[in-house]
Image (cartoon, rainbow, N blue to C red):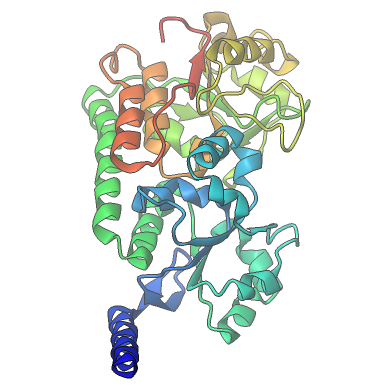
Length: 377
């Protein structure tokens, strides 16, 4: 009898194995660079080439956001320590996940990646040059590990939706991805439809990237990322014609000469990168009074001497990490309220972000992502 039980168990196991093969489907997907890549979907083991990809990956597997993640880059704890701490408190096993350095700084360990046997590796497009120069794609292909590029940072207003669809396809979560995409599009339309109808005068906006991160001024955005979000929100990006790419720098004298109507500074907690500093620590559950105090301090720098935005109190801070995840629509709504308070008095970006958390994200919502020196906004 024991023999027949063992045979039956073995047969059952074999059937499960065959069933798992049948459920797997080899498909060709196209990543945001236009590369066609063959992947067995749905993937069960994933390496996140950037830890902040969890911002969307977590939305597809809300109940178990790390169930497919076998390794990830070590940036989330440094770039967004509050969110990392919240995930760690709820999912303590993530402390045991293997971590990687970056492609661009040459600290990525390909042997470690291969040992984890991932079904796919998600890599940000900004690492494309370094990845190709090191021959990582070919090395990974030889051991059967496909690499696909996604982008929430270089051209987010162009590549966010394709990136979400791609990850949704890889995870077998197309329906959930489309639900998120629709929520994002509808949230942006609440701003753009109103602006199209009202056609208001557009204020000149200086968007400072990571103000106070260092003593230097002033990093900003060209015609993408936050620079493009300013345009979506009904403003004119001051650096649009100064910075040719997505990221760059403008001279303090240029800010004074341009005399912007509004200033928006991106901020966050970067203790993991640069301890101390004058940056505005907005983010998940941030101390808004302290962030406002820091924001006011940044207006005293020479670059802002006598400019209209400072005189009028139209200086604001927004969470920097909106520049690198599909939640940009929340930032667009908040910027629209700052730039056009009369048009968007009833728009509630906090409620939008809270709904996003309740419907899609594993963590409860906590405020702290925006502050302003204009008390009425």
